[in-house]
Amino acid sequence: KATLTVTGTTAPSKTYDGLNTATITGGTLVGAQNGDVITLTQAGTYASVNAGTGITIAMNDSVTGTNVSTNYTLVQPTVTGTISKATLTVAANNQSMIFGATVPTLTETVTGFVNGETSTVITGTPTATTLATNLSNAGTAVITASTSGLSATNYNFVTGTNGTLTINKATLTVTGTTAPSKTYDGLNTATIT
Image 1 (cartoon, rainbow, N blue to C red):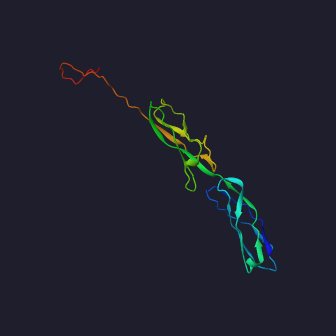
Image 2 (cartoon, rainbow, N blue to C red):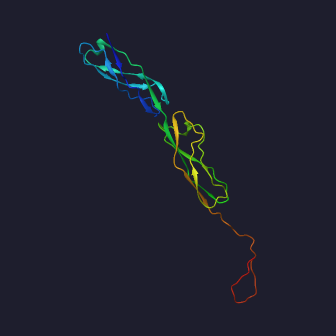
């Protein structure tokens, strides 16, 4: 049998999606004899689903044409590809507190996971920050989103929206007021102590 080879296959590249699928293009068939019309169909899968470079592609090219299986042997090309990390967005959650109370634990929400993955693929705990303290005046303060300390095999992290810390007014109550008492004078005045 004559040998068919494939040249010029483009190294596939994609963003991490948790799958081993690869889009294979660019190959040209070499070795057809006597004007035989042979059609090349390219296919392949990544040997690893994880982000990285130089990942081996398990090639599965195929050829069709008259008497191809009888007269030809197809040699699969050697191809490597790249999977880039996907991006996760880290946003600060809104919180509230009362003036004078302890600043609540600040939390963040991470979005952008692919293929049904969750925060279990992240190392580290997302932690937002604020300049507010227990003695910050009533009103609002910014909760700043942060990606500090976060890592993942297949994801990069970007900072999303900041949150708002709403500081509500504290309530003052009065205790121990003495019940007023007086002799009738026709007036509604009272001495409060």
